[in-house]
Image (tube, rainbow, N blue to C red; front, top):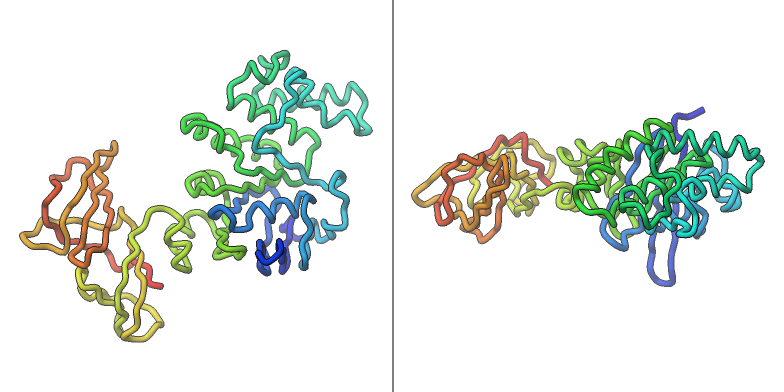
Length: 342
């Protein structure tokens, strides 16, 4: 059997004149934490709803273990969805909320109790089993919703913006918990999010969506270091996107000068270049390539904003001890290997 658990092939879905998914294909592996990432309206939630059985595509296939998932009725698919709102039953205690999904199965009452207790222990809810949802914090409620979704042991768990309702500190803690729980239960997680930091923190691989199409699928590190197009470069992490002119040996920029870097675009063409803020080194200059317009202390670093003489804005992460004051003129240098050309 292939290590790919789920295969999406040439999936298209339209809502009237709007194409939500345009010939989308991807593979998701067994026991993988996979993220569907993109701005609002890009098609990621539509794909999730098709996998769950709440929508059907106009064309294309969805296979699970090489069998047709679309032909399986929604309620019997080996897939479960954790709702963004948690959708807990307010009148039930935590034990009953988690065990509810097992009550209409062939399991005996003893088996249901044993399975529920096992999940409660693994997810760390033991001291809360007799409480009602309104007695729990947001993070605890999310754990209950997660436990309930896992109770039926689906092959795939779908999570739609699972951490959006939590504040930053709890969200970071739950990112760690989600990874631990996913590893503990060995279930494939598919997470929909518009938050690139969340996707990078959680996922083994990420599919970046825009306007119903996948722009790139790769690991978080590969997406950050080697984006294959301008959209991904701009969407993943913070980056400086500048316009330049290609040369036979690289590119030329009015403020950065001539830079030698390999590409296959030929000379004299308008190109886009990407330089990450941490890749740039600043040096004081009497009349430099740009002028510092803002300098913000951010813990271990300073976030420096520079206005180039071309009126382009560049952001740089500098050492917190660097003597870089607003109004100072600077030159910019970097390793050509850290630049991406599109």
